[in-house]
Amino acid sequence: MGEGCSGLALGPKPLVSPIGGRGKRISSYPFPMRAIVVDRFGPPDVLVLGEIPEPSPGPGDVLVRLHSIGVNFSETERRRGVYDPPQMPWIPGREGAGVVEALGSGIDPSWQGARVAFWSPSAATATYAEAAVVPVSALFRLPDDLSFDLGAALPLQGLTAYGLACFAAPLEAGQVVLVHAAAGGIGSLLVQMIAHLYGARVLGTVSSPAKTERVRELGAEPFLYGPRLVEEVLAATGRRGVDVVFDSVGRETQAASLAMLASYGRLVFYGDASGPTEPVSIPSLHSRSLSVSSFGLNFQVKPERWIRARQELLEWVRSGTLRLFLHEVLPLGEAAEAHRCLEERRNQGKLVLRP
Image 1 (tube, rainbow, N blue to C red):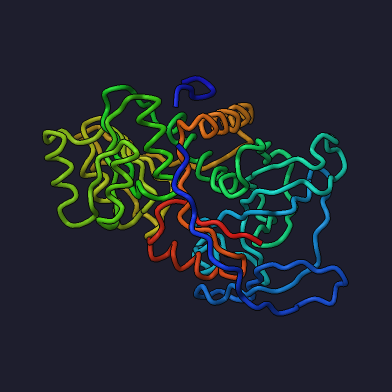
Image 2 (cartoon, rainbow, N blue to C red; image 1 turned 180 degrees about the vertical axis):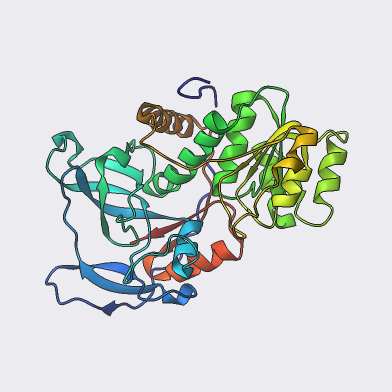
């Protein structure tokens, strides 16, 4: 598809909880802002609402006054110390949407006051707060007709799904593709992109019967996780198997993902929600000529393709050809509940916090 993809109704209204949560002051700074401050690894209850000094943008950065904050599974892993453990104290989050309030040096003045959304590759970005410093290179210009909540739901999941659909594996019309966690944030977008861009047949795995209808609405055939998953997928494909599997689950689905592949099939890992994958035996791939690869966002390689990606994603959402689903919008003080929802796999779409 070259350096971009072309050819792809907003989802149901989010549930909004009343603002709640009592904070603790951890700074004597005269102009503090509210933020979720984590001082130790542990369960969701370590996400505590506190107050910290408001940051200032440096060269190449902007300060964004946040209206909506995207919550992602990787933040639950960092909170538990199982993936890229942060130094403490730590403010989670790299995704959000809001208004640019201050500019660092070297920033085009046109960004002042702009409505933006972003996912930042910088580990220093801390979005579970009222404001965050963000590299200007990470920003989407958010149209006036797109809400901040939907803006916060788009960057990480949208860019990841775009990269998977457009760059991670060769996809063609007539192929059969399986997407794990198809009702989740990335999965729901990836299903839509594959179906619309390539006209491929898409199968989607789900963790509960409640999620099957959502996956069917997106254009995929739902399959429940369980001991019969491989047999059911093989039966549905005439014993042939699938051409590509996109796997964000990891250890729990690794064996099934490999078993479901057709000859010359490709398994693409892009997450490990159930734990790190096991080493793959190369000789075990020979009989079916299988390929195993991985995908992760890297905006430094061919940055022009990611500029194009941001433009196309916004166009698809605004036209209604790419549907964003908000599972729930919670106040910042209920970040712990958002993490519980993710870890218990209750969500069907994006979880968003509002400061």
